[in-house]
Length: 98
Image 1 (cartoon, rainbow, N blue to C red):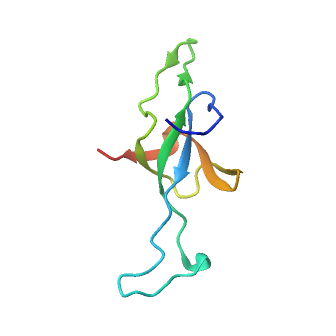
Image 2: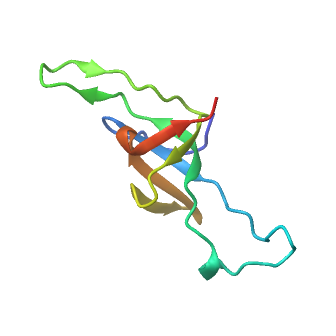
Image 3: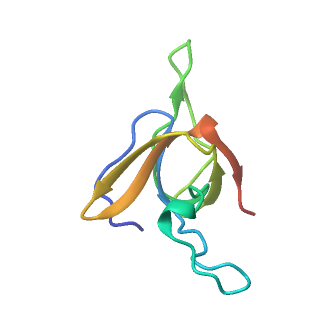
């Protein structure tokens, strides 16, 4: 589905943050410094799941293609070929779009 060449480990997912609106409703263009950090993204890759204390792997509730809302300063940002991505734990994801 995605062109990303990495598979996250454990209960982590790789997201592609969605770009916020560049202009206001009245047509004012916002510079990058005035824009809020995006909090929604598309799931590109999903890890196998969290390992419990008993050694069992708990399956992930997310799947590739899900659109999610995540904690504002959660995860680790990284770039591949000039595109920005975010790797984040499943428990830092707050909601999934229906």
